[in-house]
Length: 297
Image (cartoon, rainbow, N blue to C red; front, side):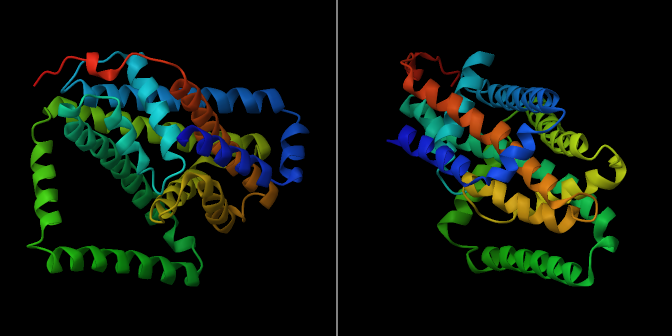
């Protein structure tokens, strides 16, 4: 059922891409370079994600790099149909025996938190560099959104300080201390490397369409795009539309709209669509049950 829904999501996305975008890709004089570079960065992106997952899981149960990559791709295939990749939690937990699932849920959240930290750090850098160049309307909107989010988070903590979910959050934060300093450092490093991988993939694909782009001008904008889009809850099929919309606003002074839209489509295909197809194929294959893994605890 989940596999079928995932395939439908990918098919619907491809169907909704305008023919003009496909023509622009097909007619590109650097088509093979475009596909080669996109594929290379996508492979590197998922190898980094797989290794990051291996580092986390190895704290409770030894797995190989191939198994970690396979689990990451299969969980991605499931999460593509859920808001904000929430399906990744249940998918990864299902690969392990019941006694490990609670810890796997925490490790999955830990991986996502560190990836978010990388996004926030680089995004804050990008926005601080670009803020003076934003239009007054965009500056005001951005300040209001960030301010509202900060007040909302503080308000929730204040209103619910005695409620159960706060205690659960405190318990989770305490459980993070059980990871070694080395594990924390490694996960953060691999999260930063992965962020660097897909953000530079975006830049290189744009560069193929517009060779005159300035690295120091465009990268802060890309960092800002990823931070802004990370604030909006969405399912992955809408991720390309969201990023394309924000990219059009922030990059329109540097590139033609068609190039921005096509690059957003390619980013989705390389980093979400193709990996989801591979993950679905792996889900359909019969594999050993995950309970054969030996727990360290």
